[in-house]
Amino acid sequence: MKDKNKVFLETVNLSKRFGETLAVDKVSLKINRGEIRGLIGENGSGKSTISSMISAIHTVTAGEMMVEGQPYRPKSPGDAKRNGISMIVQESGTIEALSVAENIFLGDEQRFSRRGMIDRVSMNREADRALMAIGVTDVDVTAMMGTYNFEMRKLIEVARAYYYEPKLFIVDETTTALSHSGREIIYELMEKLKGDGQAVLFISHDIPELMKTCDVLTILRDGKLVESIEAADFSEHRIKQAMVGREIKGDYYRSDYDPAHGERVMLEARGIFGEEVSAVDLTLHEGEILGLGGLSGCGMHRLGRMLFGLDHPSQGEVRAYDKHTGQLEPVTKVDRALKCG
Image 1 (cartoon, one colour):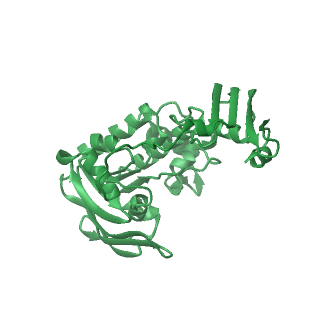
Image 2: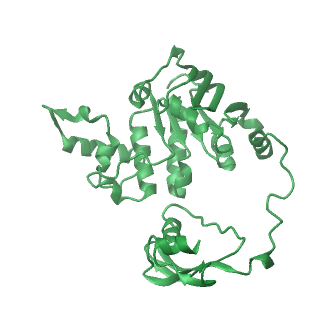
Image 3: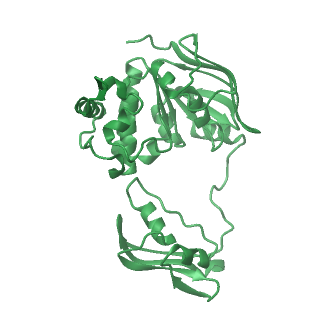
């Protein structure tokens, strides 16, 4: 076991510009071994940009990074991996047209090179081992990545990152795409790495999740580090206040909406059936904001496509208000949805 509480990675005045935008402004932080460090902030606060510089997805504009006290200037994600840093990105990090095994070892195929040829049997066997290491056993590593849903693709990315025995394991807003069982896999891996004396950087918007899993929480606002809070001092109110820079009190929900002002129906779905969707009815009135939510694979994305006319339900009908006729008209294709507004 590695020495706990020893600094693994340190940033000193780390900054990043995208054109005229200063996304990260002189952030200095230390991530210790044996620690789960949370990172939180509003959208645009710089969370993912910092993790992307650490993992060499983005270059550093100014400032320094050190790994175990030595200058760290990675030129590519491969450099980061060789320094013991693995990251699960927020967006999709796989290629659908490649097999699961090819995705897991993308960029590292030479480890299976035999007389100038890639030993696919060995690669597939090792891919199975990588997945079993995180408790995933129901994946065919020879299948194309595109045959699996988004949640499973994220778990395959987790297996890829964990396979290389990271000293710093970066999880960038990955749990939001996972079901309860998928989240538990992430939590267990983080705890195991912490117990083995490695470091974890966990980025999430879910404050209760961070309070439950992290040893220390670093808060960013407008690209700047606001403060770091130890677990013993965690308070949801304090965290929210640090994120937004002001006292948060009163009613969180809008009070200016009068249902009487939204009598006109703008969008209506009745008895919608289709792939991932079963017996859905909904009505959206003028002046309303209607949210669709659920776990990965629940059908909300498929329903959204049907409402817009990109996909057609096998049963039922979607109708939208047509400003030209003043009536609800069938949404049968995208140009109809655009015409209806």
